[in-house]
Length: 231
DNA sequence: GCGACAG
DNA sequence: ATCTTGTCGC
Ligand SMILES: [Mg+2]
Image 1 (cartoon, helix red, strand yellow):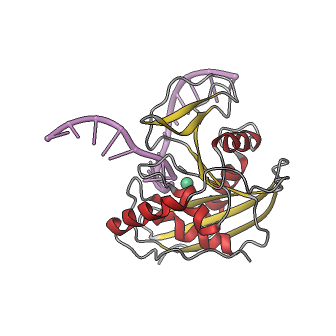
Image 2 (spheres, rainbow, N blue to C red):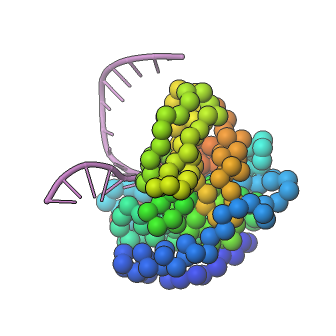
């Protein structure tokens, strides 16, 4: 079993959530000093739900690195009432993802999330928030931008360009598949940007999304499909 | 006031 | 994120 740090309550209002983010962002470590020499295990997590049903489904998958073979999967389902508000996604998806993480047998070396890390209005998106609770190196890999500006990205897989918020670099727009829309990579916690980009690219298996995130997405939709219909 | 806006 | 049919391209 994997333990998480109960840094705060999840039963909060949007206003309280913002205050929590402002405090937590100071705790983020944005370098990769503590990442294990040989990274062996990478986790990926995602959420799914049905319209008109307040039950949310969360899944965490464990993949070997760099082979990208799934070795474990854990899931959790519960009701969610926190609304979707841009910038507060972690308060909607976080609680369930953490429960799924707690059921893992193997502790991952790095965890990848379907959302932003520090490329966020207050510098603490889903991946960063989860990194603090899990005390693990984490990376945010989002399909679309939340904040920031950037220039052109080379058309070939592997090219990327910095994502800026004012004068500071908050992430990178990375081409994970040639001639296909790039993904937005940013540091979550306990990792540097260069390393985060390298890991995301190393996790690629011919698809736009890195395997941990892609497999978690596929798995969570299977999980939701096999769940009993709501009353 | 207006546009932007992870999932 | 979900819902939903067809359509375009490799
Ligand atoms: Mg998702």
